[in-house]
Length: 465
Image (cartoon, rainbow, N blue to C red; front, side, top):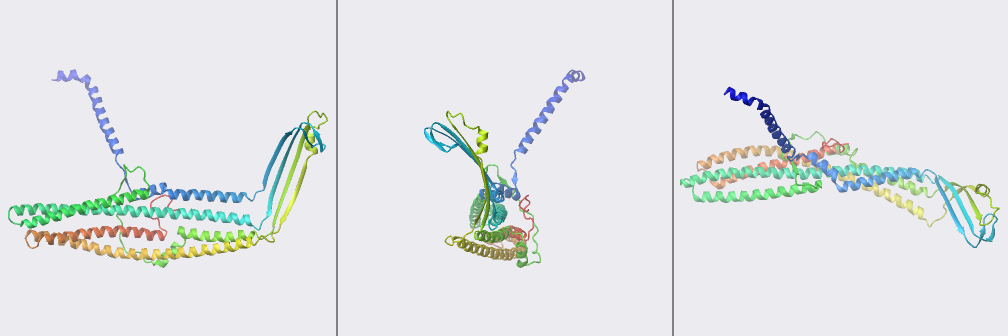
């Protein structure tokens, strides 16, 4: 035997290599399976994707770029304008000789050029006010974009938690169905032994069929909410999309010692919709100043330099190009003053409309502020209600669980009917369902109040800035 192993010893490196390749192949395929596994999206990932792919938000972002360019151009309008013009012609037959200003009957070439520039010295501060107006418009657009991002985030969060709720409800229904299967099997055995009536068995089979229908309906509700989530995210590739279905762990505790009025005062300092309204109100005030600028006189200055060159066919006395440009040069500088006297009262009408637009923007800001206070008050009241419901539902679930376990024992002893057992089981399922729903609703309201308080709500870069 030792002799046989001595003969195989030179082949040992070959077998070691084969063993190494097998292990390497196994690790490779395990890596592929791991990397190919579906990644479960968290709430923050869903929100980040929705913000990056929302078309309405992209339109708002493009509009902000337009507003920025309008701002930059309003600053450039303070610069003087400069223009250069030139022309050339070749005439045949009778024409004016531009060198002698006499009519001749021969072929003539003529060219001219002109350089002009001008600048507004005073226009009632209209250009300066226009710069301020465009800057405010741009800043208001940025606040609108922030508000839109938060609206998308809360929409996705609500759809995400709705999906979590119905997924949790599926688990509750499955758990109840498993209990029904166990009770049905036990009752079937007792019925075969004559310890239970056939009517009890039929009643349990009927109840089980109803629970199976409830499970199907709940699964359909989950699919609907899952579809709503994908639509809110505007997700394109839905084949590998799967969310993290674990219920978020968050401490349910009494609300902070604050009032809706205090929350409102804090929100007024940063809430994007309010800031956008305040900026637009100020922009409307600048628009009034722009309109009033048209009532002022306008003072501008301009200047020009030009010359020309001409030549006649067959005329040997034609001056050179350089000499003609020098001799024919002309230049001027002018200062213009324009005083508005009467233009059918259009300017005063524009001023009046600008003032009305300012009052309208001011009223809209007051309306948004009132709506914000109402929203905060309602969300604060709902947060306290969900907290009270949650604390009571925790007790109810505990009591219902104990009651159901006691009902199972009583049924085994023949002290209660099948209907009474199912009533106890349904109370337990309803309590668990209400507890899950209340917890998720509490989380949504808690995040909403935290948002009004200026706290970071979502762990997404950019949205909390």
